[in-house]
Image 1: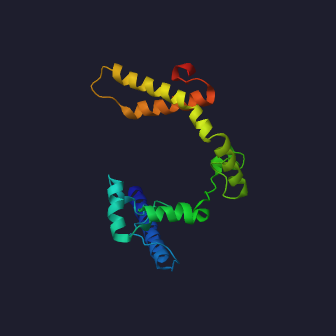
Image 2 (image 1 turned 90 degrees about the vertical axis):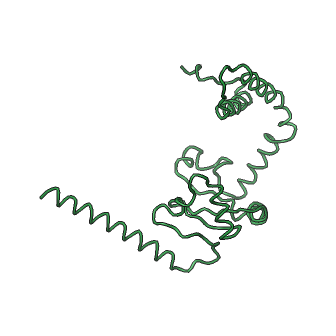
Image 3 (image 1 turned 45 degrees about the vertical axis):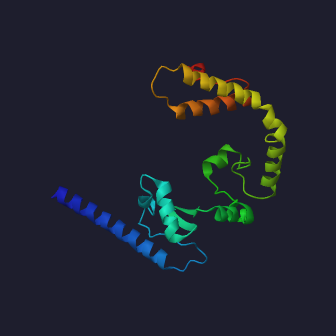
Length: 200
């Protein structure tokens, strides 16, 4: 009797949750949305995740041929605007960049970056524009980027030498490129490469 009652309660709760999600998805889709781009049909909970498959770039290309160069996808609980042409990307990044420049306020980065005061998580506005100007003029200027050339050259030479000296028939380039990026960043920021053995 106990097993039957518990299985009945589980089935009833599962069915109720499913009915609520279906009802919510239908009522939200019946509400008029103004100026939203076209969107493929979604499923409760997962949205359009099932349509991406193992090759998301091909699935997005096929959907773009049906729904146009701008489409709205729902990936889980997130709504994602997909631009599949250079003209649409230029409209977003250049013409209407002030509309799309804001970032969502997330608790953990907000605490780690002193109330989202760094250039990565700060809200779009005068403070962000000033931080961006400082970063471009002091960190990403042409003179500063050229001064890093020797470090990049040395690390790329070490990478090529490591590939040449390997005895294995296949080389995992993903790990080597991640190591190259880490070494370049560490040498520029700390003056030396940080090896995992240093921390052991």
